[in-house]
Image (tube, rainbow, N blue to C red; front, side, top):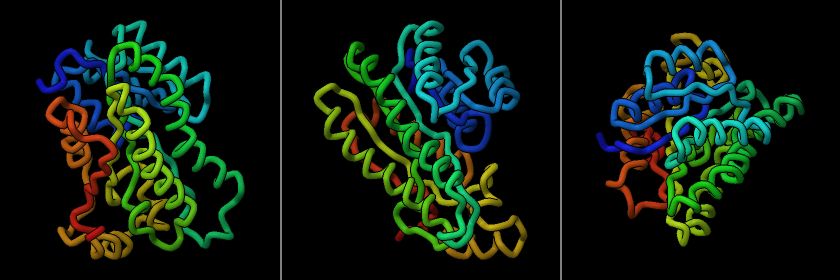
Length: 248
């Protein structure tokens, strides 16, 4: 029960890594706000978790929606101890000049602007409580970028730099900020990352991971649990590669 008494918000918690983190956090004693733009998926996860969870329809790229998400957490549970900025998006795996402008705008809004909006509304709450934890889900794409995903790589590089800068600025407020850099996993975005989901494509991507497999939600959830627990209370600005050795 390493998160007993804490309230956590996990964006993009209706599937994939976010779903894994929400379930793991609840199992460790946290009250969890399952935030997702997909109502059916988000509600399903929240209902499976039970009384410890609340679903909120959230567009992480929209200021009023993020504000409402924080407000819902406060109304239901009275505080916000942990904010996990997990919701993400990507453009298709294609040449950098072939990515449509609307896709470029969306990937930066979901992957980067969301961190700004989350901080804008969560930091004042955490300051009033005497501290908190913000966890940004970045990517190995921000550490060892692949061709075909140039603009997505850029958003994750931004997330890593933002994490470190936030950590320094917010340290006097006892607000820790860390990041996780997952290697590719089997999520709703896998086909877009790979440029199509075939056994051959999976073998190509897996071949670049020394431990020989893609990441799984439990890999990310276990790392997130440690970083968000009091066991990691001296870690801030830390960006952990959960990648099976991909970035070595």
